[in-house]
Image (cartoon, rainbow, N blue to C red; front, side, top):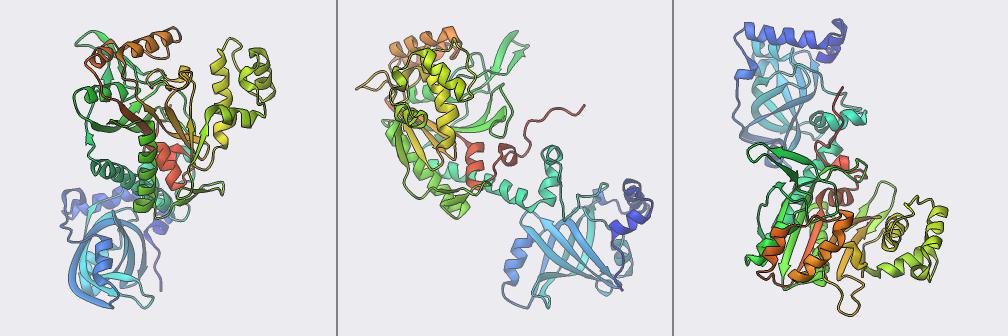
Length: 493
């Protein structure tokens, strides 16, 4: 006869799961067994134990594992349980005769969610499942709250993000994606280290919020009685490292922008920025393609990435190069777009559903059209080149036509993944370009950076990569919150 499991017994006992579990803890302590005071020596993970058994039917080597009970089935004098650790799950077979009456009776009151240690030998069941034949076991942490139902997991989106620890226990897809993100970050570092880049750390607290056009978070340093900003970019300090002679430098870290929350944006996010002396935006084009293909090969296992809407991104195919102006003309269907009077452009935007401030400058209208109508349609990898000079004061002007910049924006699946520049290293021109934008408060004037630039920065290529967006892309997540362990949420209450 199959006995009732612990959860069924709890439901029958008035449904007061919390009370029942606390009573079990009290009973353990009354026996002199405090689960929180115990430890367990692990010799193997679940994955290592599976590999140790291999294709064999038995393995006499004793293994010692520890993990969380995800499920168990009582059958009189024996039971099967599923144990989860960092490497995955493994089945365990527990017999009264093997561990003794007192330990088995105690085991019958364990709950799903408890963390236990087990030791024993390995065998394969009749169904072929690798299993630990338990000779010894011990509870090392009592779970006082029930886990989400193993068949449905967490279904409320807010709870998934707020209680990610439960989501990772119950949802195999979330766990897989979290491990993929960890592997992607590791491989980005390995890729850059292998190319002689050095990793540095620059300040989170900055007295000038520079390097990007974004609203910063502000704070106050009591010791200096001065306002500071959480960094919105890594750029300006990394360029000072170029001045210092660090010819290949990168930083992988958190950046903060006091802006919106959406499926594509989180106020706290991860970036990798890198700078390579004696390179340019063309050098960065080769680098980002090599990096993404490296991640596909080493982490994802394919260069064809399926997205939630059914689109398949063919990252191993051709990466298109397209001129910014040509794309705007193509998507508006107006060959003479850039010669149109502002009033006609605004009228077109109105018909297209783009509500724009009529006082916007011409280049800003063009860029709104690009951002809303062009970029979302760039699905397969596309390098967008020759952007207008007004869009970035930190890039070099094109020698043949200084109305444009030597930059690219890499767009994949309808969003920007990585912008890159031939970096501006003329200190006098850099000051002019900053000052031209101060009226719009688009870039703060960092005089310390400008002074450093006067000591001479070598010509260089630079690039920023949004790690969260890259993980969304490569894992097919569809939502940036699914790739951040604990995304920003509204406080409870």
